[in-house]
Image (cartoon, rainbow, N blue to C red; front, side, top):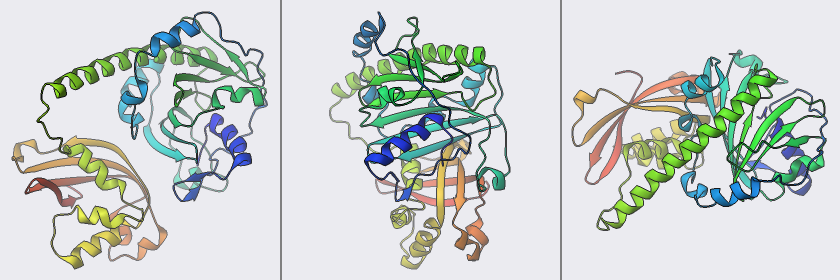
Length: 353
C-alpha cells in the first residue's frame, strides 16, 4: 500500500504500459486522499545544473547504494528529527517493486493510527515524511511532471541535479534528486505536518547532509577497495548482520525452507516445523539489529537483538501457539548465532534474554 503522492501518479502511468507487481502481489495505492491536478512551467535545465551533474558523475552512486537499500538505517530517526525539528513516534521501512524498478523507502511517522484504521477500507495514511530510493529503469520518470500539472523549480545552491516539485496552487510536494540514470532519491513532505517554509528548509538541509554522507561513504569504499587490493588472499565470509538479514529475507516467501536450512538442527522434522512457521508471514521488515549480551560472546557464539515489523497470515492463528508467538506490529527477538565448521547457523530464536 502506498501513500506517496509521487508513486500514485507512477502507478497510473505504468498501468497503461503493463501490469505492476510487488513480488507476487499487485501493488495497491495506500493513500485515499485526492490527487492534486498539477502542471509545469519549466522544462529546461538551469545554468549550473549540468556542471553539478558532471562533477557528481565522478562518484559511482550505484555502487554506494547497491543491492537492498536500508533507508531507515542510512538515515536514522534521530538525524531526521534533528534536520526537521520534529519528533517521530516510529519509523517504518518499505519495499515496492514494479516490472521496471524497485523502491526502497522509510516512513518517519508523526502519528500512530490504530491498525484497523491504517489498514482499513479505505486505509488512512498517518502523517509522515517519506524518503525513497528508486533504482532500476527510470526512463521517463524524470519528466513525469510533463504529464500532469506540476510545476518544477530548481535551486542552484543545491549540489545535485534535482526537481523541486509544486502543485498548481504553489504547494510544495517533494524534492527529487537524480543521482544516476538508474538511481533517484525522493524526499516527500506532502503528507507531513511541516509548513511550506519548514518543508523547503528541511529538503535543502537534507540535500547538503546527503552530499556529506555520500562523500564519506565514497571515501570508505575507496579505502576498502585499496585494502582489498593489498590483501587479495582474503576470502569474504558473510558477516553476522548479513547472515541475519539473509535469514529473515526468506520469511513469508516460497523459499521459507531456506531459512529453515539456516537453523542449527539435523532433525528433518524439526527443520520442517521451522519451515512451516517461517512461511506463515504476510510481511516482515527488519527495523534494527543490535549486539546483545556481549559478555557472553565467544569466537563461535554471538547474540543479537533484532527488532522487526511483522504481519502474520490469518490462518496462522490456528498454530499450536497462535501466530507462532508473533504479533502484528513491532516484535523483538534474540538470535543466537553459532559456528558449525566455517558456517554460522541460527542456534536459537528467543523472545527474551
